[in-house]
Image 1: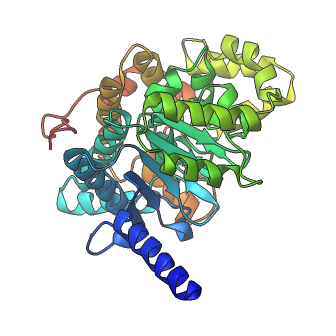
Image 2 (image 1 turned 180 degrees about the horizontal axis):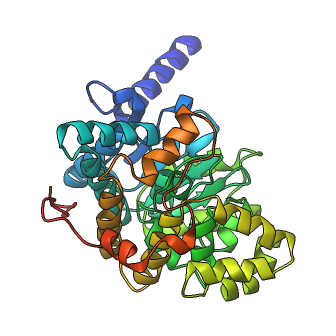
Length: 397
C-alpha cells in the first residue's frame, strides 16, 4: 500500500512538473534555440554546441519572437538565457553565414546581410528593454554577438571559465579581426565603461577572463562554476515565487559575495596606462604611444591592434567617440549605418578577413588599405553616411 501511494505521489509530481514546463512549439530549426517555461520563468538555451553556440539568423529571429510571445502573454516573470554544451555561452555571430549572405547579395542585388544586422539589433534592444528581468548565465566563451546578448541583459553573470571579447582577435574570428566593427550594442556598452578601457578592448580585441570581466564593469555578478554554484543559482531563480528586481538582486548578490575573491590582475594594474594611451584623438597616436612603452603589456596590445583591419580600426575609433554620448538605440542605429556600408561590397575587408580565417586558413588577411596612415578621414566619413536605398529602422520592421 505504501509503495502504491508513493508511486501515485511521484506520478502527480511528474504531472505537475510537466504542466509547469512548456516547450515552445516551433517548426524547423527549433532545436537551435530551446525555449522552456518552468514555474513561470522563461528559459532560453542557445543550442548550437558544435559551433560554440554561434548565433545565426534562425536563433536571432526565434529569440526575438519568443520574447515577444512571453511579453504579450505575460506568462513569465523573469527570463534566463544560457548556452548548451558546457563550453560556450555564445562565441559570437555566425560569421560564415553572414559572408554567404553578403556574397549572395552581390550577385542578386539584395540586402539579406543588412536585414540580418537589423534582426540582430532588434533582438538586442528587446533584451535590454524587456519588461521583466533578463539574466544571462555567460559561462564559457562569450564573444561578439554573444557578448552583446549577455551584456545587454539586465543581469550578466560570468564565471571563472568565462572568456569575453568584443571584437574577438584574429585567432578566434569576427569584427576587427575579420575587418568589421564591434556591433550588437558593443559600441555602446564598451564606450560607456569607465575611462578608456572600452576603447582599448574595441581596438585590440583583447580577451578578458574570469573576475576581470566583473572588475572592469562588463558583468554585474561573478559566480563560480566548478562547485555547482551556477547550477544552484539557476535553480534558486526558477524557484522564486514572485520575482522582483529586489529579490533577484538579493539572490545574485548572495552568490556573488560567496564566489568573488576580489583579486587584482595585470589588466587592472595597467588601467592608468590604458586610460592615458587610449584617450588619444587618432589611432596613429595610440600606436605611437604604445611603441614608446617598453612593457610586455604594451607589446602585446600593439601586436593585437596592428593585426586588425586599418579601416575597421579607424571606423571603431570614431564610432566609440560618438557612442559614448549616445543611448543604446542611437548607438545601434549608428552601428547599422557603418556596418551596412561595410557589408555593401564583397571585396571589403570583412569578407577578406573571414576568407583568411575560415577558407584559406592563413590568418593573414590582405587588408586594403594595408596601413593605418593610408585610411583618410574622408574615407571614414563615407561609412557614416546612410544610403538612400535602405531602411535603417530596425525596431518597427
